[in-house]
Length: 456
Image (cartoon, helix red, strand yellow):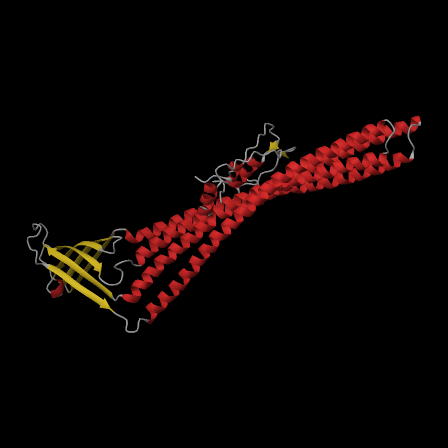
């Protein structure tokens, strides 16, 4: 079983109004129409493989010919046959023949009770090592792996898109909370200033600056509300139920916290990275396409170097005869066909060989691309972790500066301008922290794509 994007993290969300990142990804990965369509690729590949296996199904055939004219029977032929193909290229055939009538062809004559036949049809030249049926089956098996890789790649890209949407939603929600807090603080300050102005402890001009700051923050809050609303619409558009119907976010639903606990052990160490690179969907697709082309090239090579020769041997016996009683009764035949110039065969070999070289090169490039993508995603994730630690410390220092400036303002040693400036600094640094935390969701989506581990 494939391990999904949601398994890369663990989010605790006891509040039912919170839609955690893990739960959001799980819903997208199990019910989104793109995921349903991606799973149909497996069904399509299985159908093609089953059809290819059908070329080796036993086949029963029957033929009856009879002619009568003016009340006189001319001939009456009955031919029953069971053919059993094998993956070795040899067909086993068992049948029953009966010919009656005065005008029956001499070469089709049989005893009155008919003849039981048993024999083999086998290639001697072409189709000895492989043939069209075996190549079709090998191609179908390879295409099953290609379909699995395409399915995983589609789900991966969808989950990466979902991670970006959730990151935008989370950032919009957190920015709205910060904006509301900023409005609350500015409003409290304006109220306190008006009281101090009435008491003669502050200049009236300070209330103008405080009023302007309230208006600015109200404007920022409205912008944050719009951004959060639009982001929620995008997130909602990715949610579908089990009946293939779109879902709606419940009133008051909000994104979960950004305190993620990444469970990357066993994936970012050397063995884990090697396994991820080896099992990546893009690389599996490239390897499967090489296998498919190798089967075609073997068939083209065989056709280019060997003539088309086949032999048929069939023993004959009357119904009820002891096995081996008439061992010399048999039919045998050989058919041969040889092209004079071999141009078509050599041209097909040249084309299939060139295509195989192309696919081998694509496989090499795919392996290299997977390795680079994993390294870039890990570097981004690691850098974001370090930046978040530093940014949280910056936010804490900015809060201390604001608190100190507040205390100075209370005792009359500071101004509204300085207090507002310190508070703006805190809000700006909080916004940077929120942006970094939101990027973690997107980085997690990119990491999942790079590792090739979509949710089943």
